[in-house]
Length: 120
Image (cartoon, rainbow, N blue to C red; front, side):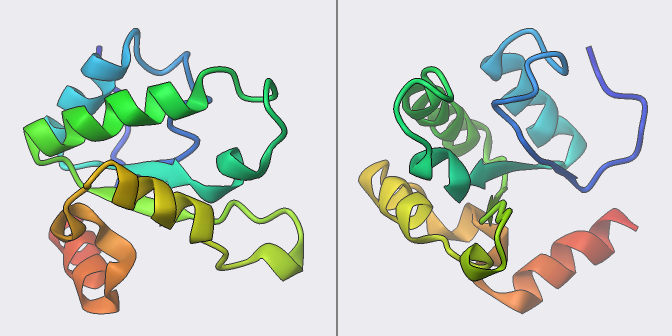
């Protein structure tokens, strides 16, 4: 199942269960279509139980992204101005997963710009 729209990034990746049947399908489609998946820092700040299984889901998604060389983007998903650009918890989680920095698009502005311009 593929989205018929042209996308650069799929945000709220794990909260959007309606988009794909499984995390595996989502990661494979992202790699095939050149779409970046999101790791949302806000997920790590919620109290336990608000986003069910988010750690395990991210663990699985990141392993599949590594396997298929699918890029990700890290987002603060700030709903408060003081949290804009806050990536500390997501960064720690990515390090724990030994996720390759070369697959993280917004580590460097030029990398993100190349990705977006490649999509155009």
